[in-house]
Length: 359
Ligand code: 8OZ
Image (cartoon, rainbow, N blue to C red; front, side, top):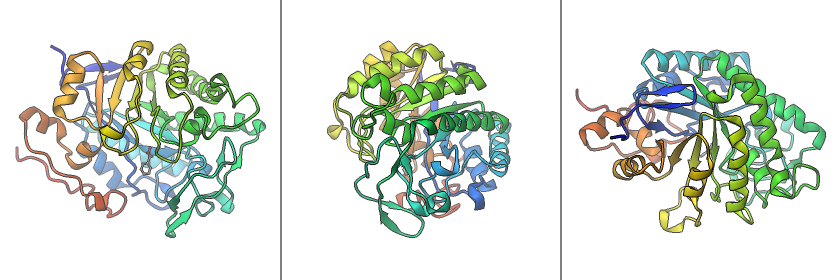
């Protein structure tokens, strides 16, 4: 009987089990936003999961929105990631890089030459952001010109090629959580009047162009995508999320992707506050493997796999705090609790010092 411990193939990527490490921002990159030996050690410790999805990695200098996030746009960053993939693969693991551009979720303090962040439309996100120089109000971003979009597509494609050069088993395009591609997809953040805004067909156009370019460059069977249809994280919403995302998933089928990483629910909010959405519809529509994500424990994950509702399950907090989560699940062992104070700070503390089970 198929369960969480059964191997599975996501496109060209062979997984030894269906337990996936979710992408998690940890803010520990070195100078130049280069991945360090400590980052390699952290991922290597977790190489027993079927697939590691790395923390989000900016595709270009303008794509950064937080301090110390490891990029994939300089030779030093590629070399740093190469060190990470070697460590993970040397320990028998598989690892895919999450390609990221934050769009308006940035600040001039984090942009080249102190420029305004870019976005589909000049709409300021509510709230404040951590810039490395304390909390600051978000600013009104600059709307991208239509003529700038081909360069953006080219940056995504180059970043995907860089990831393959760094030895990754695949890439995941981050099109969720209120960042740039989600800002294009959803109606609250996209009020463009050109071919990239307005109708759902127009709002999805940039994403499809990027997927086309990346899949042509590295092969669709090594490409996945993250979607989060109803999250409100980063001040975002859609007038008709069900319709928008059914259209998006239908359109993605032409790329024969390795997987869809579907983040269910609303940010870190408890299940009772989740906006209703028919995720099973997307399961039916999508023609490849489905990873479900958010709030699963061992029991609910086993149930999702056994019932055929998902091909794999991604765990964030549980893998963060339990480098040997697979073994703990096997043995029914107790789990370490995450240290929330050390999520985005602390170097090795709350990062590589979570205890393993005694053998
Ligand atoms: C938390 C803090 C910073 C970034 C996401 C990349 O939500 C993130 C992120 C999460 O996808």
